[in-house]
Image (spheres, helix red, strand yellow):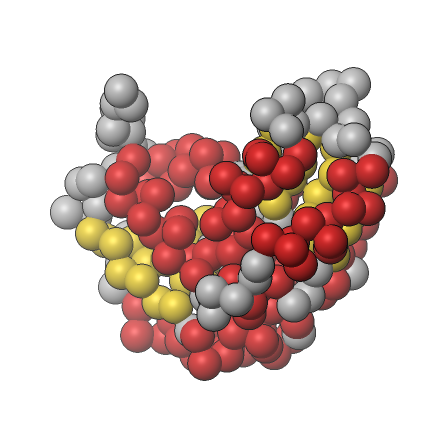
Length: 215
């Protein structure tokens, strides 16, 4: 059985690990969720790399794949890990994997640290995407304290632009998909990048026909 590690700083990693297990039940999934350093992993790219490297030391060269379900680490450190640990396979979750429909107005929800990265800035400019950041959401979601009243209040500027596509560039935000659909309406496509990351996992592990067939 192939062994994969899912690394993140909070509930978003748990969500992705659940999703991965449902789609490829033949994998042995090891969850490395660094709750203790959640704030660092969401707000400081340099420190996030060090924290991730320390947490993953026991798994380098001992598992078939390490998946970064943390957007900041994926955006700023994936190439670093691939260079340093050349015989270890890595995959990162990324907003850049979003399958966007041409000609549709797009908004992206992220954190400030991710929004400051060069890859993020180039991406939103290339696709003419409106960016909205919510630094307090990840911790509130982890703690189960993000209520609908605050959610709707925070999202009003995003709703005002009437996006037809909404990208979620934070793993925890995927937990909000049902409420986001209600708030924005079912004509707004919600993109959380889990599907794109799943495809990259299959490519990295050279899996063919491994995806569980959906009903």
